[in-house]
Image 1 (cartoon, helix red, strand yellow):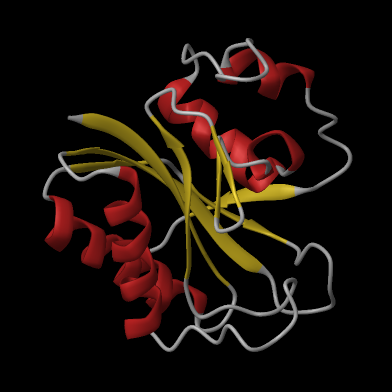
Image 2 (cartoon, one colour):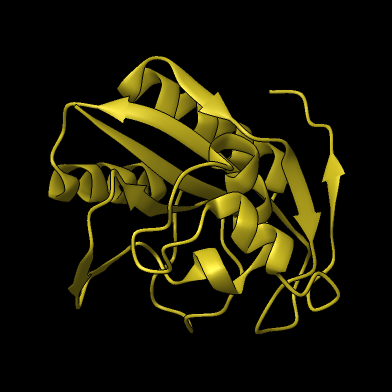
Length: 162
């Protein structure tokens, strides 16, 4: 069994797609733990605001199976992969951590680089795993959040009804 963390995000009909993503993850994996949902400006392009959160799950699946399952869920909600990397998303599910596994493959980087680069990933992850040691940085997720330049990306908690 492995403990994994998944970022969930959307900026197209965001509340619907975030809730649908959470529901799909519950149907697939059973019991999940979710962070607070945050709203933030689009990063890297002009677009509608994003809703983001992080989900903690215990899985029996290997890492490749998890990634395939996340892609299937995204595809079920019409995720368009033909556009630029930074663009609007119906549903974005990214595997952030799979236990303390370190991978650097063309299709999979673990831990995911966005953990240390984006407040909308790091803050909700720190809510669920403040004491967890980042496998590469060798600092706790909580410490990484405390050291993060919070003025660089604004985000604010929101309530949604899932």
